[in-house]
Length: 347
Image (cartoon, rainbow, N blue to C red; front, side, top):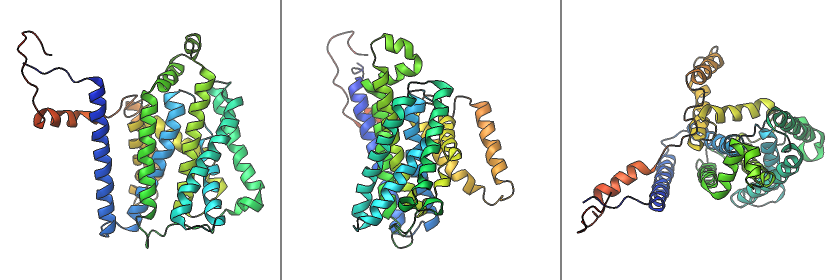
C-alpha cells in the first residue's frame, strides 16, 4: 500500500531544512577554500560583489516583482545606507568587527525611514508616474549628498573609513555579506508566501479589486516599499565597504537601471531568478574583460537575446524548488510507511 501523501506543512519543513543544509554547506566550503588560499583576492572580491548585488536585486524584487510597482530610485536608498555605515564606522572609534553590524542596521533603518517619507506621497501614484517620482527622489538624494559637504565631502567622495583588507582578512567581509544575503533571500521568500505576501500579490494582480476585497492597499504598499528600502540600505553599506569610497555620482539613474535589469532578467516576482541574474550580470562583464573593445557590446547583445527568447525573464514567476531532491532522499532512505490493513486507503 502506498503511504499517505506528504502534507503541505511537512513539505515546507523539508524545503526549509534542505535549504538550510545547502546554504550551510556552501558557506563552510567557501570558508575552507578561502582559509586554504585556493581563492585569490580578486575572486573573493567578485563573490562579495555578487552577494551585494543579490541583496540589492532581491530587495527591489519585493516592490517591483511581488507588488508590481516600478521603482527607479533604488540607488538612492543604497547611497543613504552607504553613508550611514561608513560614517558610523569612522566616527564611532569601534573595531570594524563590532561597528559594521551596528552600522548596517543603522543603514537599513535610515534607508527605511527615507523610503517611508518618499513612499507616503509617491505610492499614491501608479505605473509610469510612480517610476518618474521615485526617479526624482533618487536624484534628490544624490544632489543632497553633494550639497552637505561637511558630512559627505561632496563630489570628492567620502573615504578614510575602516574597511576589511581582502589580502590580510580575505574572509572578513565575505562572512557578513554571504550570511546577510542568505537571510534577505529567506525573508523575501517567507514574506512572499505569508498572509502579507498574498495581499501584496493581490495588489499586483489588480489593485482596485484588492481594495474592494478589504485589503488595506496603502498599508501594504508602504510596508513593502519600506522593507525594500531597508535591505537596499544594507546593500549600500556593504558596497561602500567593498569599494572603500563613496562617490555619489555612482548611485545615479544608471545604477538603479542596472539593479532593475537584474530583476527583469531573472523574472519579475522570482526570487531565485533575481539571485541567478544578479550573479550572472555581475560576473559577465568580468568574464568578457579579455574582449576589452567589444565587452559592453557582447554584454548588451546577450541581454537582448535573453529578453527576445525569454520575455518574462529566465524563470518568469517560478522558483527553483529545493524540496525535490530532499523529498526523494526522504522517500528512498527514510522509514517506509507501515502498510494499512484497510483496503482502498492510501494515495
